[in-house]
Each structure stands twice: as structure tokens, then as C-alpha cells.
Image (cartoon, rainbow, N blue to C red; front, side, top):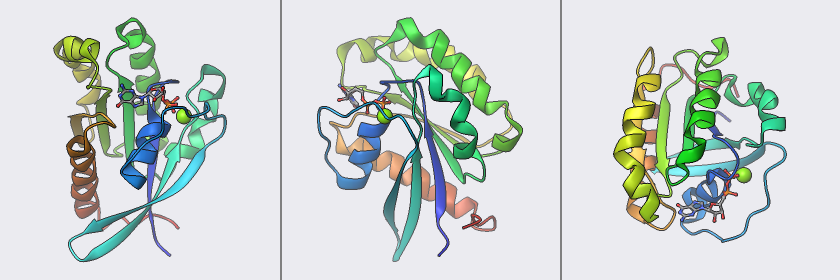
Length: 179
Ligand SMILES: Nc1nc2c(ncn2[C@@H]2O[C@H](COP(=O)(O)OP(=O)(O)O)[C@@H](O)[C@H]2O)c(=O)[nH]1
Ligand SMILES: [Mg+2]
């Protein structure tokens, strides 16, 4: 069966696994163990009358695993990048990590949804505009980019992510995933 592949990435503790769970189930649990291998989960989205299956490749975020990400973005239909917007002292590392992937040949042209995550936190709200200025130049060239803010505590923001995914699917219908 054909499915769409989503590469979900970002540095450790940015909230990827929690977000993946929240997108899947509509709720989240507090404590999740660090992901040490790709955690591949099925996600079904209702799009008009059609149910579309995705495989979400949740990447292990710690430095020692970042070299293994190739399998994740290879043949991905879209990429979902998560930054912990509250953690501004790691923005430099976040940007380098993001650029590392965006510059890979296998990731060329793959649409990107960039999430300013944990926006429920006061610190994240304070950082938001500064973060936007800081990351935006990295995002523009050569691909479709959707910039959103998200929190697992706010269902509306999760719906925004699903909507962006649906738009990308709609646009890429002529480019099915290799199953
Ligand atoms: N306040 C807040 N915390 C979050 C949110 N999403 C994830 N977290 C927390 O961030 C921490 C790291 O999450 P995790 O999913 O393990 O990050 P990962 O390493 O990127 O997979 C956990 O304590 C989560 O509960 C969010 O939207 N808001
Ligand atoms: Mg994780």
C-alpha cells in the first residue's frame, strides 16, 4: 500500500516524540524516554473523504545519532522540523543541525513544515519574534516551507499541522512515495 513518509527531526528534547504522539492520538503523556532509534509510527489523516496513511519517522535527536538520519529524509514526502522555542541558548545548534539536513542532496526540494514548538511556555512566547528572525533566512531557498507555532497542549495548533500536511499532499499527488 502506498503511504506518505514524514521525516520528523530536531535536536534532543525539542518535543518530537511527544508531538508525534499528540498528532496520532490527540493527547500526550508527560514522560517519554529519549528516542535512540527511528521510531516509525503510522498516522492516519482524514482528508475530505479519504484516509491517507503516513509513516512518521521520528528521528533520535541526540548528537551521537544525528549521523544516522539519512534513512529518515531519503524518499520523504515532507519533513517536519521541531524547535523548542523556549530554549534559546541552543538556537545555534538547532540552526546548524537544520542546515545540515537541508543541504543534503537527498533532502533537496522536499517540503518542510517548521514548528516553533512549546509555544505554551512563557519563555517561548517571549522568544518567538527573535526566533523567527533568526531561523527564517535558513528556510526560504528552494522548497515549499510552512512555518507554524505549536503546543501539544493546544489542539488547534495540532490541527494546523495536519492542515499543512494535507496541503503538501495535495500538491505532491503526482509524486507518490516509493512504498
Ligand atoms: N510545555 C511543553 N512541553 C512539551 C511540549 N512538547 C513536548 N514537551 C516536553 O518536552 C520534553 C521533551 O519531549 P520529547 O518528546 O521527549 O522530545 P524529543 O527528544 O524531541 O523526542 C518532554 O518533557 C515533553 O513533555 C509542548 O508543546 N509544550
Ligand atoms: Mg524523541
